[in-house]
Length: 275
Figure 1 (cartoon, helix red, strand yellow):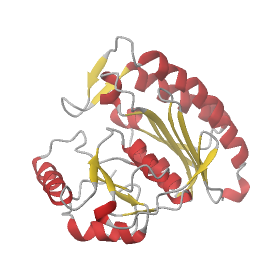
Figure 2: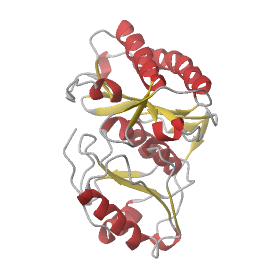
Figure 3: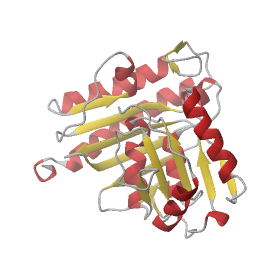
Figure 4: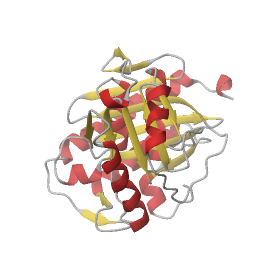
């Protein structure tokens, strides 16, 4: 199906819209914010999340009326998620909303275009720090126009890992996550948490960290990072070691399959409900 779709037009259209959306984040991060709760006290949404998603979806719909959309804020408003083989844009307007609320600069827009459930185009952009990650299937991954590649680290003892608690405070999930932290801290070189799934994946893609693991994230958090990590030479799998499923709310990415599988051997598993 991708052969009959003008991917260059999709990419150029997305670039134009993202540039407008970046301004909303740059203008909003240090301003007073109207904050609303979603699922719990730490699951937040701001007017900027809603404005960015509206700008992106409306702009893409105008150009591509037959395309489908999965967006974080439209989903929060009750729209049902369904990933089909149709061209589908998966959008997180502000990944790292908690960071955004606190003016902590690790925030980004994350967008992927999937066709036949395969990612073709991906952008993760942090307009606050000026980091623009992008990838197109088969063309490699870029940061600010320059090719990037995952690190050469494949041993857990030398690896810098990213882990997140996330916005859910489900007791079962918390037990697993905290147990995994306790397990991995003495085994790894170091542990980090940026507060953004997409940026954690982007760090793996650029070789700044070596792996990222999280349970309970959503398709819009990881769809763009999936393509960017793979195009940078990394791997993205299910945390139990199987094939990655963007709708499973589970993700493990790493600089190599050797490192990924070593991590799998040490971690406990949690299976949230699917998107």
